[in-house]
Length: 324
Image 1 (cartoon, one colour):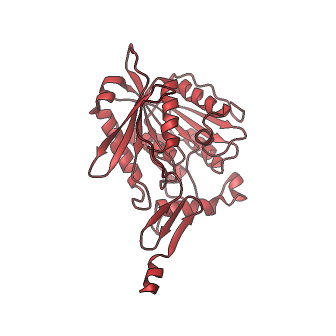
Image 2 (tube, rainbow, N blue to C red; image 1 turned 90 degrees about the vertical axis):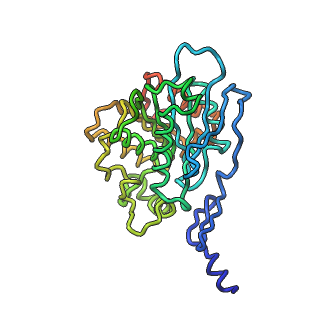
């Protein structure tokens, strides 16, 4: 019996300080486990609440509206997809809750932060399907906040890391399947996108990128036939890349991010595709992956907020390879 227990508890996958997966299917997560309740934020006055999108599939979201005040018209709607390599973090973590409070206040928007199911318990494409169900729920305006405050003709997607991957795929899905009548996806913001490929590019050749990404991808999509050239992780292999269903896309990369070269590569691939929208890219000097979440009060993080506000207001000024 002891030997059987040892075999059952064998570690089959582990990312240090992130996640550990055992042979018996049990999972230990070491980051992104803390959650905070919805609230009225004392600093910004932003109000939030949680909703269940699908009881059957355990999909939920946190909704945000700016401080109560008379609005001459309805506000843009941001649908946000959190990061975490598809396997850690939630829409309810302090990091994302605090960031959405700040963004909603600064941009004067309505936001929906999607809590999709995570790998390895729910491997890809579950996160994509959950997120699409959340998008369809949002544009249905079943929720009173969405119905009363959100302008469904001005919808934006955004996400960081794995969430940027999701935001990309949701943009493609809008282009292929459309939204309900009257709803319009205007723009898509991809922050430090979690993309990959079998062949290393740029700095990936010397920074052990492929080994780390392969481990993460094996957790997110643990089938024997998928590779890092699967379209779910490598958009350059996606025949539908040119079908992005919005007018504008902003790609954000960071100088010291191990995923930087993939962000640039995606930018170039989308530019070469038959998509006719406005495409821009910003690289932040001296910063690491999702720096704006780890250090939300830093100068570059505050500049990030201003950049997003400009994007929502259709006045993005691109600064490539320079401090913002």
